[in-house]
Each structure stands twice: as structure tokens, then as C-alpha cells.
Image 1 (cartoon, rainbow, N blue to C red):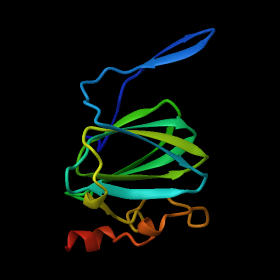
Image 2: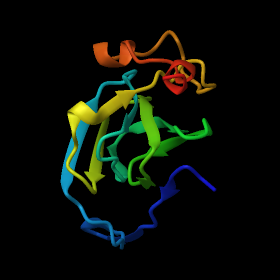
Image 3: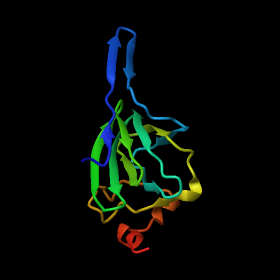
Image 4: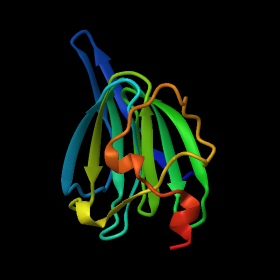
Length: 152
């Protein structure tokens, strides 16, 4: 079983452009959009107070997406491009490395609680991250390793 699922979408194309349609019973309580320059590394973030289900979509660009099951340490990664929607359940820490300039949309089924979020370092988990080409926030630079997180 995958740690996240691709949300199926139907793309209707005509001479004006296209329309993507996805059907889901997901209840949206918050919408966020982030912009990242090429090389930005975000996460791995997870919510421990009011865990969120997230639908994440790449609006522009390409990312290497990372997912970590915080219960058992299982991890997955994939290249995601414009037009892909994925459903990330609660208790999955996730993040990405921007392979190009990107815009990402996040749909949450709960209101995001910044005081209930943790960050686990993606390093030493086997994810492919070129060490010469990433930029992180101060918070992400100080993230704990998964081994240290599990011992808390």
C-alpha cells in the first residue's frame, strides 16, 4: 500500500485550453499555495495536534516528493509534475525538493495549526537529495532526525 495516493483526474482539452476534473468527498477547510525557487527543500512536516489529510497538487514546475510514515518509518519518493494531485493521509510526514521553480497547492481537511507541527530531517532516510543544490528554512535546518524523533 502506498503512503499517498494519486487522485484521478480527467483532463478535457479543446482549442481554448483544458479543464481538469477530480471527484472526491474530501471536505476542504483551508487552501494554501506555496512558491519555491529551484533547489528549495521543504519538510518533512507532519501535524501531531489536529493531524491533517492533505491533497497536494503541483500547479507549476516539478518536485521530488518525499513521504514518511511516522508510525513505522516506511518511506517513498516520486517525481511529481504539473497537473498531478496526491492525497496524503494523517501521520505521513512529507516534503519536497523543488527541481524547478514551483507553485504547489495544499488542500487541508482541518485548519492548519502551526503550534502542532513537527519537522523531521529528510537526510539519512535514503531520499535522493543532491547535497550541492538545496536551500532550507531555518526551521527545517534544525529538524530532528527520524531516529531522534522516535526516541522522544
